[in-house]
Figure 1 (spheres, rainbow, N blue to C red):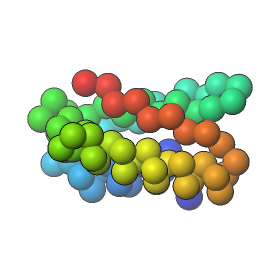
Figure 2: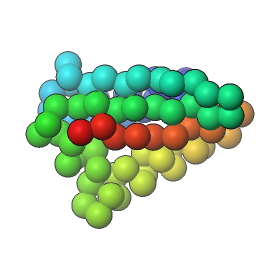
Figure 3: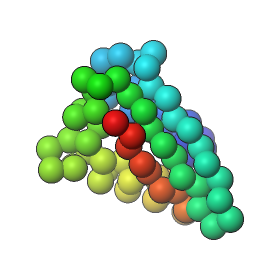
Length: 78
């Protein structure tokens, strides 16, 4: 499972408005930037208290990136 699909699966399970989840993949020479957009009311669910959920999402992407030999960077757009 690619990092983008994995991130989409996890984010959709966290938010209440699944139809508004948008993940844009921007491939660079050394890394892949994943921009996540969710409904305004769901942004806090993705960031978490003190950024704990966002930190966990980045750890998941780090593990997926090691398997795929890619560096993923997560950006949460509000």
